[in-house]
Amino acid sequence: MHRNDPLYGGGLAEAGDQEGKTTGGEEKKMGNKSLCWPNINEAVEELISLYQIVWPIVITSFLLYSRSVVSMLFLGHLGDAELAGGSLAIAFANITGYSVLKGLAMGMDPICGPAFGAKRWAVLRRTFQKTILLLLLSTIPISVLWINMEPILLHLGQDPAIFPSAKCYLLFSFPDLLAQSFLHPLRIFLKAQSLTTPLTFCAALALILHIPINWLLISYFNLGVKGVALASALNTVNINMGLVAYLLLSEKALKPWHGTSLACFQEWAPLVKLAAPSMVSVCLEWWWYEVMLILCGLLSEPQPSVAAMGILIQTTGLMYVIPSSLGMGLSTRVGHELGAGQPARARRAASTGLVVAMVFGLAAFVFTVAVRGVWGRMFTGETRILALTAAALPIVGFCELGNCPQTAGCGVLRGSARPTFGANINFSSFYLVGLPVAAVAGFRLGLGFVGLWLGLVAAQASCASLTLYAVARTDWEAQVERAEELTGGGFGDGEEDDLEASLLG
Image 1 (tube, rainbow, N blue to C red):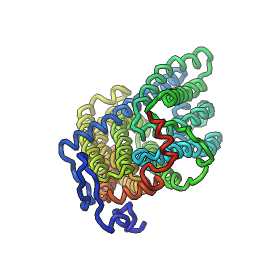
Image 2: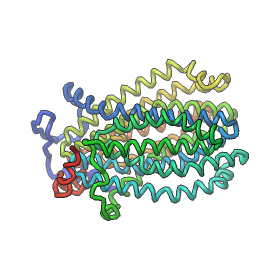
Image 3: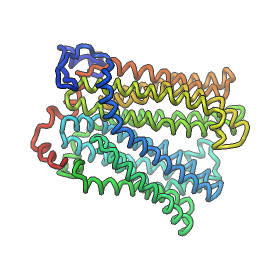
Image 4: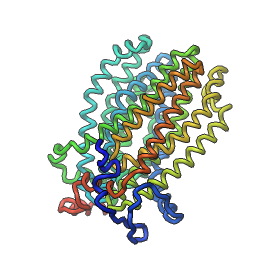
């Protein structure tokens, strides 16, 4: 990419310094394009804004995580073969399906945040409609892949004895795949309006219903593995129905279906250019842990290593909830301010969020060191697995020192429409730095299981450094110009946007 592209801080803003309005309404020059730290009052104001967006996302993430735990418990109740098959199917679905949908949907963030900040309701609505169509189209190749999962898993050396249960679970997960194609855009559409609490209530209600639905399908109708898959699909459908009901009844939320026309089939290029790298970025990070599981199977003690890796992946998944939620909040806050033409406030949101992320990273490190001797006992009593888990947990915590600010920084990059930059960082950090380090440390140097996690340390250190450098070098005035171009120019002009403004209540 040319060095004068706005992504790199040149081009649009180099003709002269522009002015950004501060919180108090006073104008100040933005000649210094690097990251600066807000004063106490500004930081407190920004923390409140972030908190209002982020805390419901955190709770929702834990609720959705609990859904998967309930599903695994019911699979385990059916038997070892069903648990193994269902677990394999879930992993396959995550890698080939759900990660793709989530990544594509995140292409909405760089458009919807600035569009809402600029009061361009039509852009926000059309982006929502296009994303649903994009995700539904994506389910076609994903479905073909799921139908042909057996030869793929056989080629990867998986046990054919568990294929029937795995394929059964996957085939009955098709309804969930379709439901997720609506849920992801709905989540981002509401988040762009800073409406994150409705999803929390809908997810809580769906989780309450999830247990009796599982029991009804498995125990009463004797559907077995099929029942677990269908229960997960119904959980997603229930969340979708709750969100649609909220949109119908709320006077705050923009109505996404208002003025639906053939316009949603036009001008796909801006969305696709953002959705594709967002998908690549998400998939690269998700797939890394699957690669680590495969490498564990090649160690001298494959069984305890794979089991310990599974425990630690679940642990990192739990710790990832907070920085991930913070990154989502930051993408919204940065997008709003860029769309509203406020580079100073966008910069303030980014710097405040990064400080919060660093604090969480330090807390995660202290936590893992403190519980390293007891954490594994919640999952197993096998001595060797406990030893491996205890040895690697401090390293996992050390990774969080980089992962938390890196994840928050990725939220800033998404909010300022730079997902390609994030995808390049993830690829180079995880696969050109982390993977070679993991292979050399784990096998060549004989460090085994701990060596694989040292590879993650190298990946996170590289990823965090590059991401923070990108954020620090951001030309915020140029990003305001890009946000204006991305949302169609102008802030809130046009009859269509004025008409829709009445729907906001």
